Image (cartoon, rainbow, N blue to C red; front, side):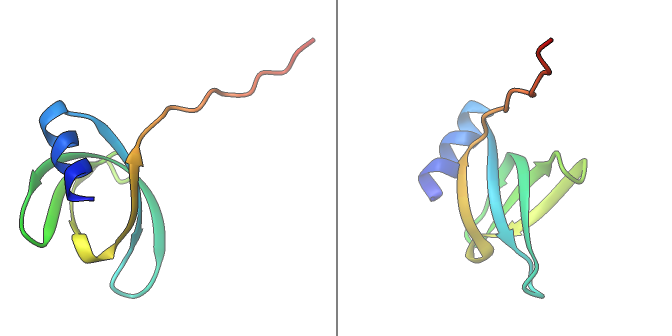
Length: 75
C-alpha cells in the first residue's frame, strides 16, 4: 500500500480509498496525496473538499481512481 501512496504522491495521481474512522464508521473517499508520514497520509479529500489526515492503519483499501461513465438514456 505504501508503494501505491508514494507513487500517487510523485505522479499527482488521484486515488480512491476505503477508510475506517476511529469510531468504526467506514467511508469511501477520493483523494490526492499531499504528503506521507510514518503513520499518516495527508491528502486533499475531494469528498469533503478539504485537506484531511488519514491513519495508515485505518486504510482498508486503496486503488487508482477511475472516473465512471455516467449512464445516458437512449432514445
